[in-house]
Length: 105
Image (cartoon, rainbow, N blue to C red):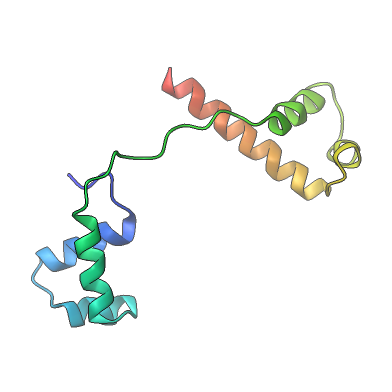
């Protein structure tokens, strides 16, 4: 029913449907009643649904390729002038995107 909404919007609408006032919901989220009212109004605006799938970036593909060839995170980081931690994050995101791509087929 509300699958296209953000978690905060779903929770606010559920609390409102349960009969709580805007003030009570506002206290729960540490927001003003006016803000909660705007969230409820915005939730009623039609949307196209969740964001489209993004294909992996070239950097992500290159990192996966280098890792597949046996290069370490430090070696790859030197090639791209990034930190090894950044390369680990890019690799993780690339694996995630590939998994999502496989599941979408």
